[in-house]
Length: 358
Ligand code: GLY
Image (tube, rainbow, N blue to C red; front, top):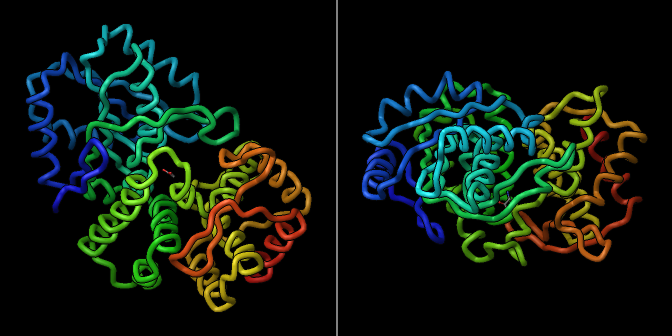
């Protein structure tokens, strides 16, 4: 597969990707390599990765706990301490081998340790392949608030090995798919349509769909790397989705949702808002809702839940001058940014979500 060219780095794939990675590492003269893994990837991905890494450079492995609740400054401190104890210098390379938590947190650690070390992302979940590892966003959560702390800093390379998906649980696959659906909804009706029928999907088809998803994301980021305009469209479904995810994360009575599961609900709610505010047709609203309803489990929200979720909206990173700015759709493939709405309409969007699931 041809590399995808990002602003200052390449996104490489599978076998040819490892050739590119080995070539890059061996020409760059790094002092040491630090591989950040979590408890899952340490066991399931690291042995495979080490068997294909060809280098004489000293390798150290730093393990963090798996899961969104560990995407914190405390975990960063542990990794910074480990890097210091292992005498990491600025000529060292960090390789983030894992899902979105590892690539976001590892990228942030690399960007800040000794004011910046090089890093490479090797995403092992579908979500991090099609979204988190690409585009240079790095960071951690602040309490329940998603990705509130971080910097935009590009990796030196992203290597996507779709073979890692073989061990990924189904709910994690569905979580990643949500971001792929989002790419169709904000940028390409034909890509969305391909995703609406995933029966008889082969691993080759999936690899092609991942490749196309990364192209969509990369094109958006190339146009607007610092999210002044069009990059905001990548947040479709995320305004309410992040609020739902944060609320569930912080509430022991609610089931914790994977990122994509929360975002899928957010996309139904925000499609409803789009049908009221930006002209999304009822036919497309129904089509979008049906796809997500068939793929993701229904989550019930009480009035108290909704009130609390609305409270979380004030922390959304796209807010400006006290306004909550939504990304909505005019039609599938055509997004509109910076749309404000009322709490009343948000309540109605939850009522719509409940109605389609009744
Ligand atoms: N995940 C959204 C972005 O990278 O902008």
